[in-house]
Image (tube, rainbow, N blue to C red):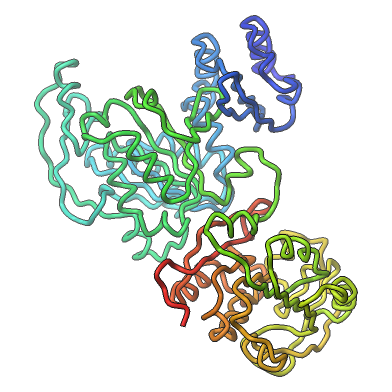
Length: 524
């Protein structure tokens, strides 16, 4: 047991709130989720010898002071912020530091994670000069990309209120209360250039921000509104933002930020000195303007952060949530058809199961043979008719008409064992050959390892009748030539669908997405 954990356990016992923890011994090696008597969810975990815990009494000044001082001795950040960096920033990530000041937070990221690329934004000229001097080595190596500009809702020139006697207090909103309380001199008004996160990413062809930290003295909402196109598509994985009295100066509220992020399907957590407090809903008492940092987590990582059981999307629940009544289901890449009973309970009257692997197909056929209004066929579904090569793997569910690529690095135990030539059809052609009526089916489920876009391109007629699509998606090219989620988004948007749910519970490079037809869009 390390010294910090020993001291923590001692104070937990003395303060008599360790009973709220599910087996405090778990602190020494694994993540747990606990609830206090009021039902507030807290996260308790240990990472890199730092124990994060909250048992409904995290605000006790003795414990908070202990942990904050320990963290500052290590890296110069609060204990909670340090934990977020260590947990949420991974090697190879693209990180944005908006309101970088002199780069303290960025230094922590560079020390904690290797091979990250950090884009810095600092509009105060004097501060920016200190920043680039202190990070000269990282800038020279290309790990850090500095920008002497601000980030806002739109590109323009904006007035910055520069406090010569308190440079760190400079902001795009004048700090009237602070001037009165601390006797600051009247600020100098400096016009500076600002851009938006969406515009910046488009210019530099940055497709995803893995971690965004925002500390802009009350104009956080402006920054987020300028990132709308990124947030709507879930192109920002984690987002840390500051809150406090600066919001009063800027005339915004935490509730506005909270509601905006929830609309974008992000869960919000308050970063505590010893953990994360899940804010599942906004309550009036939360608007206290006390200094805090918050973490917003994209929906695809929520089950991991919340410690919920791992699993893919719940199709019946999503259909019910979006008022979709199943008529029939087409399942491409059906494997052995384990979803049969799920579809039947949903009320599907017709089911078509399609499996490319001839050996697996025999097992599928046996499973569906006695199910009424159900067919199983042995085809690969693509954008053309004819034959294709199926690359069979040691785990047959990973087999694909595309070769393994990054999949070999992520799951090295799964290897290609043989190649099989199989019949290929477009979905539109297959329905014609089987003399099936496309309008009998309104749900499409696909699990074909990177070939999803090929299947969709050959299904443009069938898509006119589809109301919901559940499909595997990839964020990295796990298979050679595999379409990534953004390409699926673009294609399906053109055909009248929008993504309404996403999850990546097992690995950030792949998961499931649920698309539904946009309201008011014609199906013809």
